[in-house]
Image (cartoon, rainbow, N blue to C red):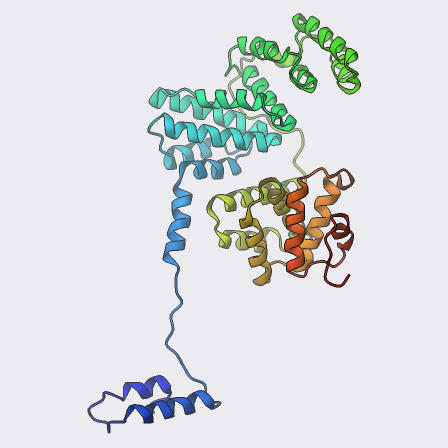
Length: 389
């Protein structure tokens, strides 16, 4: 028995064995189907957004995205495997392509300076490979290091100084680099905290006079905090063991203790967010949340970290991502509000230790999505009225 529905009915219109029906009659019958409780069936196929998938794949294929994804996986026990992966998936043909990779590497290292012990051995081997393969030197990496040292961001400058320290220790930079940086920093226009960050665990007695000169400068200019910091360097006048000869091969330093589960979780979250901002593949975010952030606590932390990225970058794609995840019921509205509370708790809320304009944009986004419960005090602080006030 043939199952009759509106689609099958239309098929009989041009059937020579059937009585010809006029258009008006067919329309009347169709309306009856639509008005009745009879279920109509449609032959539909799920549409695959080929252009979107191609766009995502193109982004993944860019060298700058590949190197970030490799660095996201680096640990103290998988260096050789990821060097092989670098050689198999990344092709460098000229200085322009190499400069892009160097830039991404440095940005990643500065941002995630706590993982420097994983990154340093990797980049030393990588730079050696490209020197041997194409006779390319990491000149751009060094240029960008110096640019950041002259920037206004104290945390970024500190990170760069730590990178340079490690590279000198492992003989990637010649010992003259130590003198170059020490001389570069011995300038009244250089923030004195940089003097401390450079010579901390990196002291050489021949620069004692430099420290004394900077202490005097701090006293004369009422820079008490910096004065005490630099004075603490002179309490131990022995040359830093970091500067002793290193004869052992370059291998990653093993951590004294394993990272806490919370630290590991935040690192994974930051890595997946960073990858999303490059390729904007929401399916990978959803898969990550379903596997790595199954409980409410994990989703709250994910929202906190995503808010940090938004405050720093002001990228609308982050707000769009949050809105989509809520609509798909991957996140709850409460996750966003609790993520906001976690962010504020970790960022010295009373001193506004964040970009105020971006915070207000985020609060307006929450308000437009009716997310205000238990965070009314934050709206009040930023003088944003909510609907039921």
